[in-house]
Length: 123
Image 1: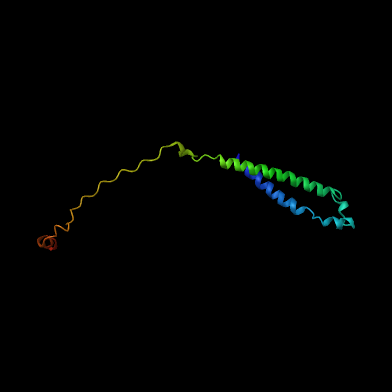
Image 2: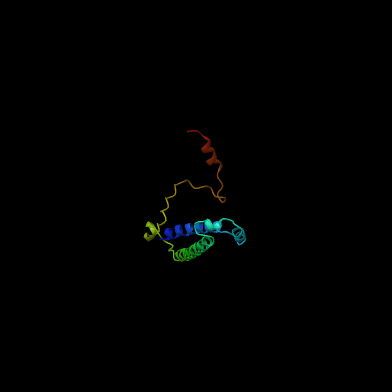
């Protein structure tokens, strides 16, 4: 539903832009008074301005309504959506046992000379 409202919202915005660009300014009526040829148009001399004004007003109302609808949808969204929303959180993996290593000499027990000589002798 939200996607449909968003599509209508964008289309209404584009249509408003187009209709506003098609409309004549206030100074355009002076040219029509001196034979601008507007009386031979599809809607007559003043019909096009009334039609474009009404269509713009209707599209503005649609744009306003879809803006409110999108605001309502965004404020009522649920945080957890999707397939995994109802699943419990995975537990932490068990820690692997530490590899057994020979204890390192501590500063209180410095390595003896005999230990270091035994390491240097090839087997």
